[in-house]
Amino acid sequence: MSHPAGAPPLRLRGARVTMRPLEPSDFEAWSEVRLRNAAWLEPWEPQRLEGAPDPARDRQAFERRCAARDRERQMGTAYALGLFVDGALAGEVNLSNVARGAMQSGTIGYWIDRERAGRDYVAEGVVVVVRFAFEDLGLHRVEVCVIPRNHNSRRVMEKLGLRQEGLAERFLEINGTWEDHLRFGFTAEEWHTRREELAARWLVPASASPSRRPPASRADRSAVSSSPSGSASPRRAGS
Ligand SMILES: CC(C)(COP(=O)(O)OP(=O)(O)OC[C@H]1O[C@@H](n2cnc3c(N)ncnc32)[C@H](O)[C@@H]1OP(=O)(O)O)[C@@H](O)C(=O)NCCC(=O)NCCS
Image (cartoon, rainbow, N blue to C red; front, side, top):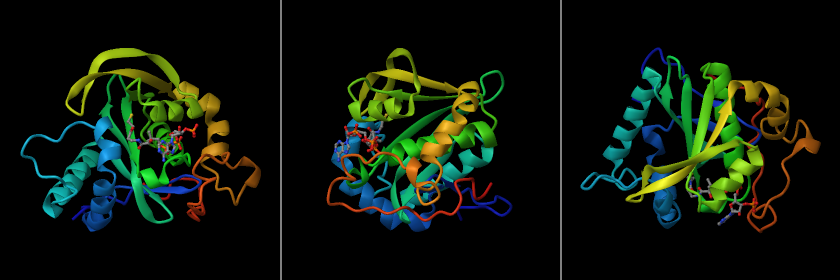
């Protein structure tokens, strides 16, 4: 069971994307997108522990993953969110390592289906999660950590204007190697200064404000079509 009694479903919306925790019934979609994108994603993700079953191939492993994410959410330590475009699973934007006390921070990580890449969906998802982190969770700082050679991810940071704080050496294990990471920080003060600008660009559906639509990117100009998700509200739909 993905949502224990008493825990209301978490649903977040941007201009085009919808975000929610993954559920056991998402296994087929997860399996299809993760297996098809294995070569696209593996260079940028931690290695699976040796002998651990692959949630993309093993339904029970996927269900255990969902249950672990549910427990993290209940404890307030992490918020893993599937990113949906036109109702289809397209990727994830996760807020993890949530620390309270004097820190009040969290780390954002993400990936997207290569067939959906290049349309600014991840930047939109990051803004949705940033708003959730500051306005719903009351955090003070979020960060994104990027391997310097990951130019696609650095473009996401550039598009959002997140502040680059420096290089953390051998910071995370990625695909079997302790990789240096650029750390991008964003505080609640910066969010409140830039909230209107970021919300107008990333959270308001184009149908509500055509002039504010994000500029067309490479994939928008390609033959692959995409339409807005039709979400009526840019605000959080659940709690
Ligand atoms: C990094 C990533 C999440 C960016 O998501 P996205 O929604 O495609 O981001 P954008 O639309 O802003 O595109 C960023 C850049 O990716 C490149 N790109 C776009 N489509 C691409 C494609 N189909 N293939 C390769 N690169 C592509 C472009 O250089 C683009 O920059 P541009 O918009 O200035 O042309 C995505 O590339 C991804 O999932 N990569 C693999 C996993 C990963 O790197 N995760 C992040 C770890 S920090």
